[in-house]
Length: 601
Image (cartoon, rainbow, N blue to C red; front, side, top):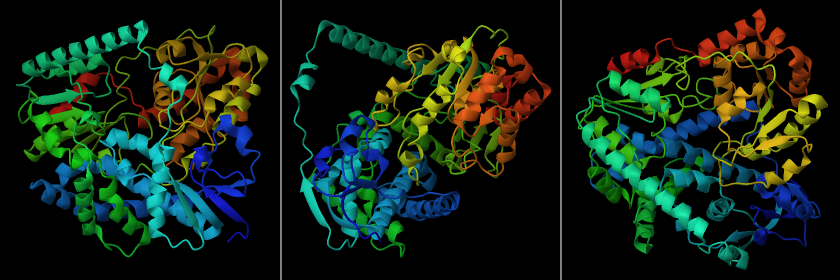
């Protein structure tokens, strides 16, 4: 244990900070870049991150899956008892699996992070928010994702977690989390003519969507199957429907965040009672807390709001007992679709889920994903694994191959990613801390003539967490152009000689499948790659496509810029690219017929 006495800070909210004494930040999520001038002057250190190293990650992965397996039977049986139902475990898996996976990993990480900090540091105190813990409860799965990222939510969670720890000599100060609204914020809420027109436009668009859904629902009620949000293009999804003599159904999701059901004191008491089912159910410290807290965090749509959600689903005009339901994007946070699907699966409908992005079949800690375990068939983009439900197919977004020929006069496109979601077992913010510096290093190593042709595609934050990264964009050379996401990514790619990806992304797979000159780099290249996938990623390295550092990626671009064909169209690059794509981004000559056969068999 460190001999230095320090005050613990768990949040970027400076109301919880102490400036008159030595402090320790629980993680890098506390340190916003645009507040650097504040925290750099403090007597501060950052706690050791939890989950470093592949061996630790491997062990934690197996532990988390065991906890998930142990917790689920108690959870679904308790929910059946609470609702007076007798649904199968698969019914509840369809509803809960994605949320439960994230919940277990979030709790595992937060408990382990806090315990490690307490055991290895001499902490004198901590300031936490003193709000009712019902603020830990989201309306639905989508709301939970953003809560898991939110600093204030995590601060409230840590207050609850401290009740499980025996932290001697630690003073816990509590403060209210009520924020006063500034005049500048109030003034921005004035309804001007532009805002009014925007609201009218949104309302009209919503009404049109409702009408279209109503009409397509009536027409599709006799469909033998339901095909919805498949990751195919809209045109291809319509073609697939028509090939199966089905009327395309336009599905508008009910926003379960709009559920009228809220938490009151009686609900909180009931949740506390339900938690007794997990009382000391495990001898493992972490597992026991995860079980004890589950009903204190479970989204409303599965408990108090379940009856309301049922009523919403029952009013929808939808096919009765379809033979199959095929989706790639609605399995996770679309609560009404999930409930409708689960009810039909209980009656014998086959549930088919398609791959909907990268990392499937390659990521070490998405193995298998929650959706793979609930599907009767999981359609991949070419790979297969040990699960019997895997059906290899093709990359869904590319059903019509158009070879890009002329890119000699194009520019360089650098595609960035957002701050990662904090629902992994390990500290993703710690691992992401050098991400932006690597982008600057990459740009600085380019030839000046290439830098002048560079466009950086910004990516809006996908999480509730912002680290003030926008401030860092000022560090790029003035000649660099930025795209704020206003131009379609396809147009930017078509204007580029080389496309650069800074993470293992869907875009990378699509560009490789389309044979577009592509450079990729990220830190710790093989840390998250499954052993079975490593030989294929090694091919990308050997062909000069994948790099383990920004300097290496820049050097490659400087080397090939004036004659890209010599590198990209060489036998070595093309053979390795094709072998990689045959495994993870296959192209199909008859995509509609191939999917039709999979759905009917």
